[in-house]
Image (cartoon, rainbow, N blue to C red; front, top):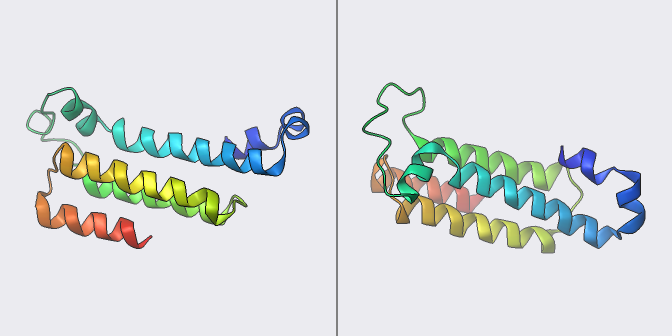
Length: 126
């Protein structure tokens, strides 16, 4: 969907390449916020609930690992498939690390501190 929006001729005529890069970074940033904050576990914890004890039969009992893998995929797609300069992507990566730290360490992790720190370290490497 991002590539389709960025290929619209009317939009291309009104924007210069730097604005298109920033629009792509904005879309990638929105997708990362959606992946991390809108996960049912973190969304419930954000509003003061506890979803994990009520949903023991879920296929994904480890939201930290799942969110880290999806976030890594989004960042890799931003680097490989969309031609964006690194100076625009550095803000996306910094915001990703801050948001993931807030979700994992601020809201709480179901996987324990050791596993959460390992996932965060793997995200920092990317």
